[in-house]
Length: 219
Picture 1: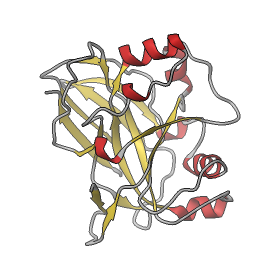
Picture 2: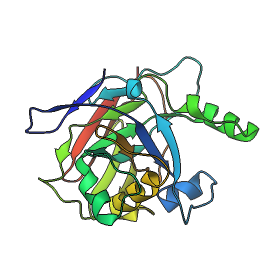
Picture 3: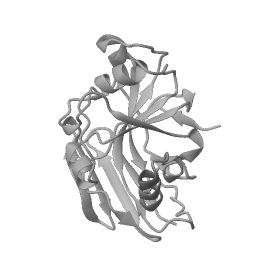
Picture 4: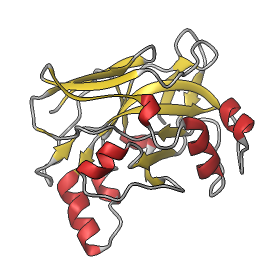
């Protein structure tokens, strides 16, 4: 059972579904050679068993030769929502964190070429790294927050969260129109441009202004 804690709170919340948004920054969609979504976000899933905490190692699977980093804003859902309106979507966000969505890019490309799901590129153990969570009551997201990631102290990704094509409220409205979201669900909201390969021994450090920081080593 995987649980998370919100900063300055004693409450532990069990992680439920992990819903991920793809191609939510136009520059990242373009760098991957993909179309930019305009009406509905691209959605895929990870699992709670993928998740580790900042400071723990990401274990590079032996069956992949192209592991990529993706830094993201993560939303924690605090209530059951279905077909949410804007207010319900906003109220459903109880906390924010920084996440790393680690991706086996070679597996993903091969699956896409065959028209198959790329689930196994996303759900290997340790493929999701989470920072400490900050209560939405304590901090209100403005969209001006810088999101960044460095590999071995060299900046690779840098943007602001306001560049997302679908903001957190729009994401929840869209996802909840297709599936019920519940307390403990996490939403990874997409990554900006600059993703790239990492290898064993690389040290990753990233964060989002006023939200938190995440660190890991590739093992």
